[in-house]
Length: 274
Image (cartoon, rainbow, N blue to C red; front, side, top):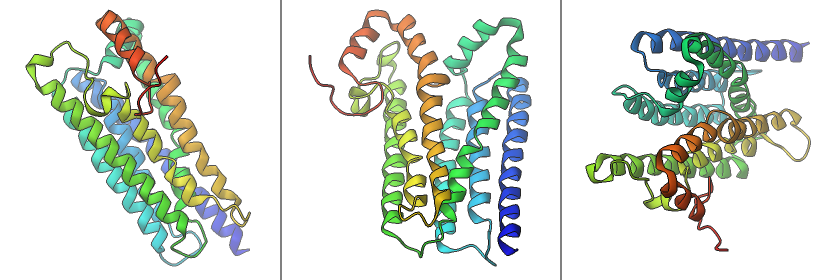
């Protein structure tokens, strides 16, 4: 009966992580309303997801204490959270409000705050797939380390480093007054219109790589595929690219169309001519 107790404990910690996400986004809604800056939505989501990930990674399912793989995954989540969370905080806090939420304010009008609350709650409900991926990766029962662990860490180093580089290049471009109103097309941005989004998506592949066991001894590892799948949907089809691309098309006109013609939307590689 020990496996039943372990399963119930694992389910319990995942439900606790889910509740943490729901509460965090509710608090985030109150906070953004206080400062009239909906960009804080992204800050609260990042820290909420990161803290939930660390908690589920270190949860000692079936063991007296966390193992090496659990500590590795927790450390990775902590690095991701601190890097992305503080980057967003430093970008959002001074203002102005992120253009995606500016567009939502125009679209939703007087119903903005009510719709934003449920928008944030939908994010919380779906985001359980991220702590779930972290959980099944951290609790992969194979002896540590596996070759897959090294591959996963490599993916995360590339992803976090690439996203930090893209963010830094954009910050430096915007800091130059001569670039006001222009499109950033330097460095990684000369190859991709959204290299930061690409590397954010890439990072979530590390958890399936670490979790999946093709011998069939750990079928739960397949659940980790939900994280990159959800991140791709959110970035490409929901709150990421659609409002941002639409805004840039309206505000930059022909310059944006020319930029689109010579760059890929995500993958930071040269675009084939013709």
